[in-house]
Amino acid sequence: MLGRTQPITLTRAIYACPSCGSEEYASIGKSAAPFPCDASSTPLYHPSYVIQECSQCGLLFKSHTLTAGVLSDYYSDLNFAPFEGEYDFPTDAALLAQLKQVRANGRILDYGCSTGRILHALGPGYQRFGIEVNDAAAKMAVERGINIISEADLAQDRMGRFDAIVLADVFEHLIEPTATVHLLASRLAHQGKLLIVTGFADAVLPRSLIGEHWYFSICGHLQMLSGRHLNWLAQTAGLEVASLEKMSHYRRERARLAKQIGRAVLFTLARAAAGSNLGGVMHRLPILKRGFSWTHMPSTDQFSDHVLAVLTKH
Image 1: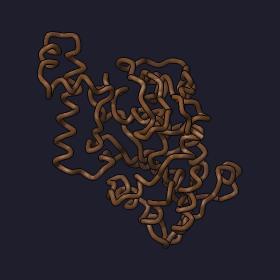
Image 2 (image 1 turned 90 degrees about the vertical axis):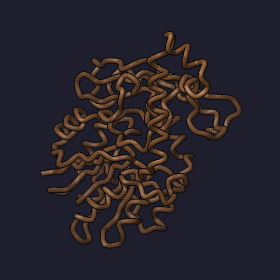
Image 3 (image 1 turned 120 degrees about the vertical axis):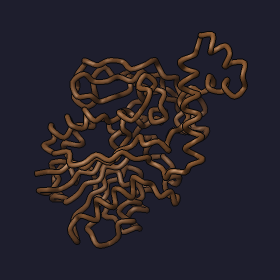
């Protein structure tokens, strides 16, 4: 549906916080440049945006995004294969450690389960359910023994209560994050756990460049969790933050981490030196000049910029 010959920019401006609806927020840093939505030839571009921090609930969100309809098509057509490699995600390991604490034959729901990677790794000793909008990914999840249910099943309360619900790499994509989290919280059993894996705004430095951070240079990433917002979210959902663990999303490799640190420092220095005498000197040095060519910070996926938040229902 997105395969067109000309670039499309079906965008929307966000005038109120997606989480609490407040129109009181402050901009962080400068506008980030537009960018293509993936590395393929798909002519879909994300608009320029500024990161806003909600004064009421602490959510960090983009001022401009793609429309909900365009995002729905994007997710439906998304190639899930890149997430099926042997990556040994630290976030997956942390999730599995939590899920293995669930009672034998316990009921577990993975909201946005993709191909069922996490629940498949957990094993068959549990009742495993998933919700997934990508039909091809959902089909693979079924082949892995995951019971795929619909959004309607959950919303109309046809599936009972769950001992644990997983929200992994999904929160940042939600059009209505609070409504979704409240719904999931209402479907937890007594002492059930909501396990959220997502990017963590408090770990991004310098904060003034958060709009150009790699996490926001993904088309479907609409917002980023902060510690303040997590506490607000838990309180409004009737949950308690039991633990918060920071980690990198990808397995640490020393050489890759060192390279990413160097690039992050160069990018930060280039932004700070733009238009100054130091910037002029940097432009004359090929290695340092590269920092000015990057529209967004190069990937820092080796940094501890993700969290596993465990929220419990009492």
